[in-house]
Length: 113
Image 1 (cartoon, helix red, strand yellow):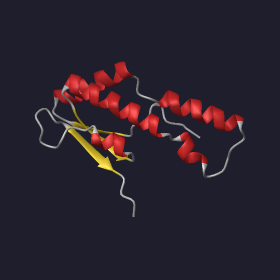
Image 2 (image 1 turned 180 degrees about the vertical axis):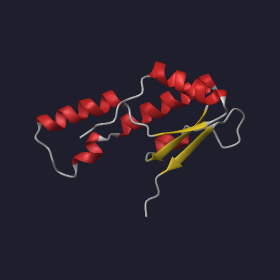
Image 3 (image 1 turned 90 degrees about the vertical axis):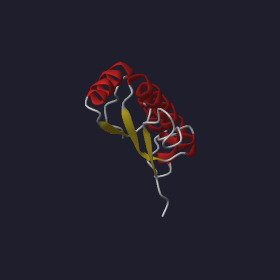
Image 4 (image 1 turned 60 degrees about the horizontal axis):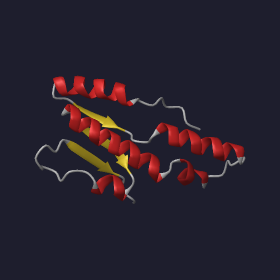
């Protein structure tokens, strides 16, 4: 189900510090990998293969925790970051207001069409 490698916090700090060094911007897909893996393990044990497992597997907590980690790390390094297809209101309302002092975050919300 899940094939992407996670970026650990220590590596994220190094990556964002490097991006900050040339005033770049990085786009992230935010989901906390250990939560996804636990959910996946439980669903596999249940033998689930139906399409309704996606919202259970790709849970709101995984996105929220990853977004908060990214915000913290970006603040610490001063790097500019964007979040790809943030799907939760919780992920948006915690972002600093655009143009706010020190604001270097760009959420990219999902549009339901």
